[in-house]
Image (cartoon, rainbow, N blue to C red):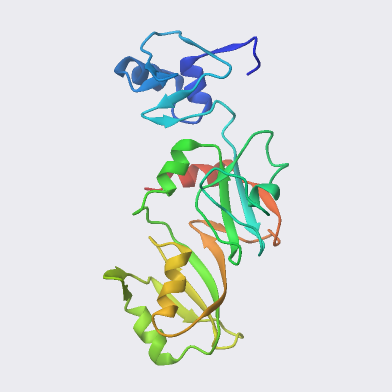
Length: 240
């Protein structure tokens, strides 16, 4: 919006990807929407440029919901905390949209692989829930060959700092050395993957996220990004 235009509140909410205009009207009547810190229940309320709109406490933006998948290269930081960082992943997707897109999860500089970006605040909140279950498959390179005994232990899950980390699957990769393995987790971060091996005296030299839910690195070279298809977006929104 520019300084001379306003947008009807229900349309603003719909444009943010929260719900339909009709559903937005119901939420407005229920008092779950605030503008500049004040609850607005007025039908037809006009949002001005610079207004802070919050839906159920979460700040939203009326920019067209956009979803971008990056195959992150090494050396770039992905942070979910707003700030200015040297070699930020946002530099790599600068041309993906005329507005800011944030990663849905963090990834350190040494890690590589799939990273999802969006301005859809509802989707961001969903994927950042501590117990959000989503399939993640990593290709992990260790400092030494993984023994069959260690692989068996990991398959059963690992307890770290009094917390049990379940492992969906772990296997050697055909044609690769025994220090290269595939690891599937469903409700843990990439840091948990590193902790699993560290607990058995292995050091992770490289970790690459090759599958995130139904998204894969197929036809997406390292350092490149692409917009998600409508079908891919729908599948993401269906996840619970």
